[in-house]
Length: 300
Image 1 (cartoon, helix red, strand yellow):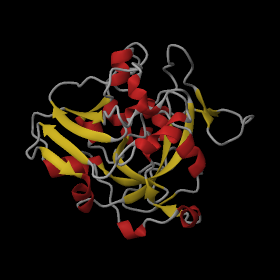
Image 2: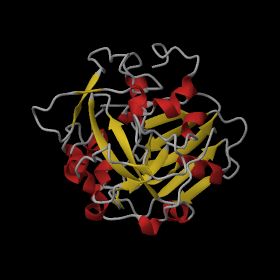
Image 3: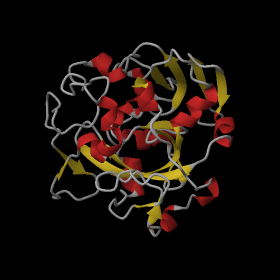
Image 4: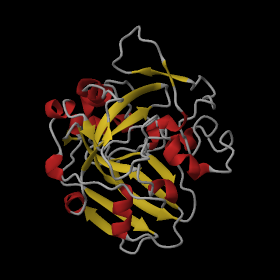
């Protein structure tokens, strides 16, 4: 790991949405032009205008609750999120079933503003609350043979009506290379705008990998497994030609059925001009080195 995010914020520093909107200096993954070059220092977030709470919580992809953008907000209230247990297993020193409240008692919750780019070529700016995934993996003790991290979403047909339809091979699974998982930008989100994360956004805990397309940021995680081999991922299993394992935001590599060169900003209005998509979603300074020497048209 090249560096660690240095943070002074404690849970008591998390603010509600109204206060937050007036607070212009935050610990932020600020993206293009700001980046994280100033690790350890508060970074001004003025360049990123957060998407509204209403848009973030009502425009979602979460097929376990339906394939329409408004289905998750309408149906996800059925998901029981307390108590919640996360199994951590595989190549770790301390495998087991971890109660989420116990996990959170050991983590430092902080605020970060991240760009969010969907593979469908729309985007948001989301003020997440959460902690670095690296801290959770360190707690479990990563063994030397581990090279990848696999994730699994909850699979509860009685609470997730979308599971009745074979849209994907349920349960939803995702994966990262270990160095991607340990990168300081990679976080486990438990809130938005200082509030508990809504069910439709992946309660009670989800992954956030801001330089990758949104479907990599798996929701409602119940299992994390350290592996030696590249794990299967849901969209890659469904259509490997369209959804690669890496799925890094890359305006130079189009999806087979549409361009990735630009994006529609949610909340900017029906007639707003599309904006140019940034390499690695604006986080190239921080993460491009992870892929040195790789052909990104092959490892997409």
